[in-house]
Amino acid sequence: LHANANYGLCATYPSVLVGPRSIVGSDAKNGNTTSDGGNLGALRRAAAFRSENRFPALTWGNPNDGGSIWRSSQPKVGLQGNRSPEDERYLAAIGEEAKRANLAADARAEGGVGGGSLSVGVGASSRNRAPLELLRMLCGRNNESDLIMEGSNGGCMLKIMDMRPKSAAMGNRTQGYGYENTNNYRGSTINFYGIGNIHAVRDAYQKVNALCLNPNTSDFQWGQLVENTNWPSMIRLILSASWQTAFHVHYNRLPVLVHCSHGWDRTSQVPALAQLFLDPHYRTLEGFGTLVEKDFLSFGHPFHTRCGHGEGKNEQGGGDEGQLSPIFSQFLDCVFQLVNQFPDYFEFNVKYLLLLSENVYSCRFGTLLCDSEREREVVAGTRQRTFCMWEYLAGIPELVNPAFDKAASAKGGVLMMPLPMLLRNVTLWTDRYCMYGAKATMPCMPPSLNRPCPYVVRCPTEQPLALHTMKNGAVELALQRALDDVEMWKETALAALGEVKDLKKDQLSPKKNEDDDCDDAS
Image (cartoon, rainbow, N blue to C red; front, side, top):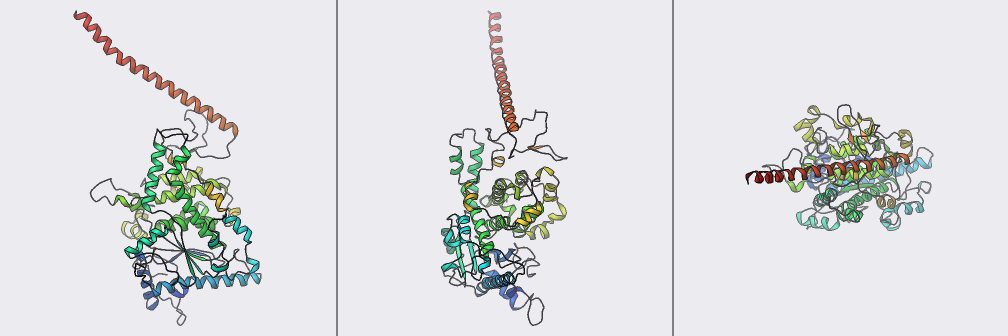
């Protein structure tokens, strides 16, 4: 779809988009692509019914069946219950195309040619059906009635996943927006996933940072205090929504439409994480950079607005501070949870994520600048004028996981662990939030030791960056590190004690001199 080649259809979308063939495909009569006329007019009307003209566009599709991920913004329903026939036909076309792809996949499977993913949806052959016991084990009683497509919801052709709390989606109707009425969208169902907006994310992020930097934080209630910031809960909500997206796509072979309000914050996080579950390519170094470029940069996540790049606090024209929010850092935290729990499935390690998170705000590279592809390519020209962050990261060998087997990962395909296992092992990213904390939270290696440090990322042109996350270390190494820590803190304490004694001597010396002067005067 080249209707947005000049960013005229949607200024915050990429120049090249993918849509359902029956809406934006070729004209059956003359074989030419319908770049104007009725189809383009219908597409413009469908886009006008969505906030910021961000109509449903494909971000990932399974080549073997109808499972796919689409993204958009909220519809302009309003209190009057407005409708758009073009938007309804557009979503119906997505469902019909997926249904035909699933039937073709079943035919290939029955004929012994190729094969599709396991499914429980309508039209799935018994040979291609996943055991219900497996699906129930994976769900762990989390939203099981919606995830396992049987009975009343077995006829679903399109799954709409609204990332907002339902109360927020209903409240947006007073501003002329809202959510889809499934009575008007044939064969669709909708669910809400309760992920907080940018203001809730900012508040939780500030709380967890303040907690980690506060020297008076209680160590005995540390876990409870971390949970009270609400940051881990947000991470779990995003991971859960992403996992469920991947579940519908892989097991139910459904097209899934993901959206929030504007479709560039939560709608960038969840599809990107779902693709990490589904596609092993995005778990490689090259693939992860492609994933961020596609779902955050090309689809218009506003990095400048959310990160405040180059904006001084309270400066004249310094932007709206209420729009600042660490959405991309939160996404990296979610990726950290996956890499931390399943390190062998990723070509990069947690050091890679930590260095990437530091360069979100460094402005050293043009990769994460500006608010949209149009601003980067047309207005600012950052690709021609700045350095690429992905090339920089690719040049540091310590960021690569040596245990990663690309061939085995590609053969294994999806990464679908039981959902309770994923959510119960969410932990604080201490390397990130406690890096500059006042208290010792992570095991550290004193720089005075004259032996190689496996926790240091070394780049030929930079000073070493100390990182502290490492698993499966030898017992002897852990014991030696503990002894080194004791010696380091002992030396630090003795040095501080010596400084205090010197300071007391300096304070007593003037007083003694004054007494001597008084004696001489008398």
